[in-house]
Length: 383
Image 1 (cartoon, one colour):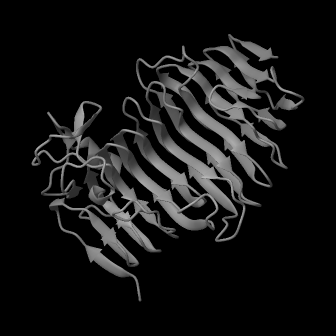
Image 2: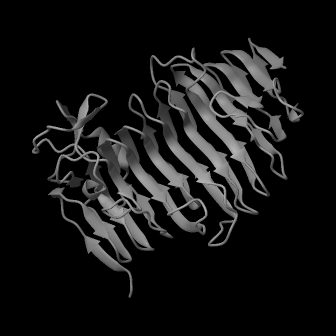
């Protein structure tokens, strides 16, 4: 049938909702800037909290942070919009036995918004629109769009935009198994122990479905915790004839983060293959806060068109931009990689640009550096 519009008044709603019809779910603050609203939250023993007289707050229905049934919003249909809510996995009204502590806050629920049912079975959803929400205090993930398997047909048409996503145990935004979405203008703040702020993973099947011609990840602000994999990470991406544009993002390590153990990356691009075209453009990495192990880390990029890294700045990292055949997480690539680096300003790093094929068994690891790339006060390494 036609798309239904549901207006939700201000208030607090302890619920786990299954959205199994196309609908537009509008909170009391639909269309309103999530950063401005979050700045007005009241800080207390349970962290920053919304005012339920002006916000529609959907919170945990039970203290069950390992249960898919207790996840907050289950998207089980195409064309679902969620706009203008606070989705808070900490519900102080519940008994907290069994809660998982994340960032010093009890989390009563596992995931906030996802394409899973109450049993944890994944659903292929097209055209999910998730915008202008404050999503916080979840044991695992803020937003997850994932299809049932890595051979599922592609889903697309989705947009995750204008959200504040903070204090989660694993990932702020996760796209998996050929589920594609534009991701724009979000503020993602990782807690201690998280995996990634924005992550596309295990989309290695170029098969069938609604293949997007381009994917836009832009104007996001991500703060990365210690030993996270990355603020922004694309891993195993292989839809045919698709360009992924990662541009105009700001990625910083949190205060006190150090890169000493060769983890905690700003932007991480791994296993991008086939006829895809990855472009990293005008991103600001490490401008403030702590220190990355690697500002931009690149690995296993056997695409028909070289990956481009253009413009922007990289600083506050042990290694500024690295292209390597032997990755600390994955090992040897077993394939050639090619990157064009141009117009990037790199400063405040020990090694500005590292191109490393050591240990390979014949892989070509090549970087063309051009366009007035500026490397200040550090070295360039080739091995």
